[in-house]
Amino acid sequence: LIPVACKAASDGAAATTRVLPLVLLLLPHPVRQLSEVAHSAFAGLLTAVAEAAAAEEDGASAEGEQQQHSAFAALQQAIPFYLQRSVEGLPHSGSLEGLAIGFSSILKQLPAGNVMSLLAVTKVTECAATWAQQAAAEGQPVVHAPVSSRQRGVTADAEPNTGGPAPAQGSSASCTAAARLFELVQLSLQLVDYQVLPSALQHIAGVVVRAPADVQQQWIQGLYAACIANDDYARKPALIQWIDGLNRDSLQVRQNYGAAISAERKERDDSSEPAQHGGQSAQPPFLVA
Image (cartoon, rainbow, N blue to C red; front, side):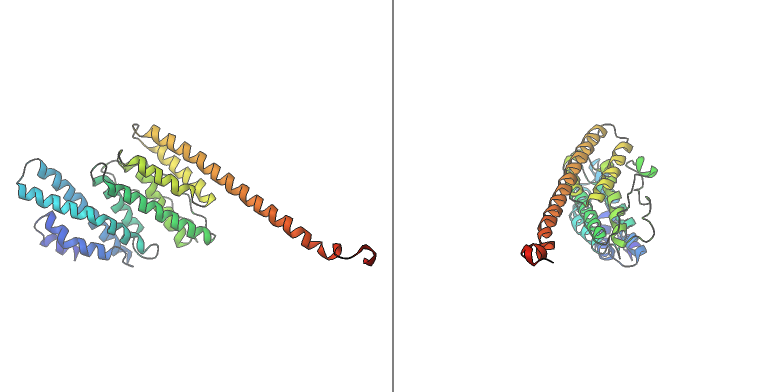
C-alpha cells in the first residue's frame, strides 16, 4: 500500500499526508521485512521533502514553498512518535536494520541545531542501556561492536552501518538489541551536527557511566574506535578529549563500586563471624568437654 499511496500523491507534501500514518503503523510489525519497508519509506520521505524544501527556497511559487515546508514540519513533528514506535517492539518485532536507516536519515536531513537530532541520539542511547541492563540480568555479555570499515568512511550520502559484527550464537535477544543499538550511538558521533554534538556527548557519557561495569569498558572501546575512525578532523580532537574524560570517569565509577562491594562484603563477614562461634563462647569454660 505504501507505493500505491506514494504514486497517488501529486507531490512530496501530498505523499507525506497519505503515507506517514501507514508508515508509523507498520514500524513495530512482527514481520521484519514489512518493518524495514516502513523505516525505508520514512527515511525516503524525510530525504525527499527536505531536498524539495531546499529547492523551493531557490526560486518557486510561494504556495509550493509553503507546502514543502509544511510537509517537512509535519515529518519533524512525527519524529518523536517514529522513534517510540521503532523501539517499542524490539527486540522481538520491528527491525533494527530499518531503524538504522531511519536514524541515519534523521541525523543527515534535519537542519543544523535541530532538537530532534538530539532526541534521536538520546532515545537510541537510552534504549541501548535498557537492553544492556536486561542482558546483564540474564547473565548474557553484551557483545562489543567495533567500528567496521563501512562505518569509518561515513559521508552525507553513505549507507548507515547495519552489518557490524554479529553477536555470538546463543546470545539473548536483549544482548543483540543492546549491541546493535549501540552501533547507532557510535555512528552518531560522525553524523550529528556540531551544534547538537556537545549535548549528545554529555548524554552518551551519562548513560555509559551508569551501565554495568563490563558493558562500560566495551562501550568505551567502541566509542574510542569510532573517534579514531572519524575522518572529520575538525571534530576529532574534541571527540578524543571527550572519550579520555569519559574513560577516567568510568574508571572512577568502577573503582568506587568495587570499594563499596568490598566494604559491604567485609561488614557482612565481620557480622557473621561471632555467630559462627557463638555456641562455644556462650558456655562457661568448666562446662566445655
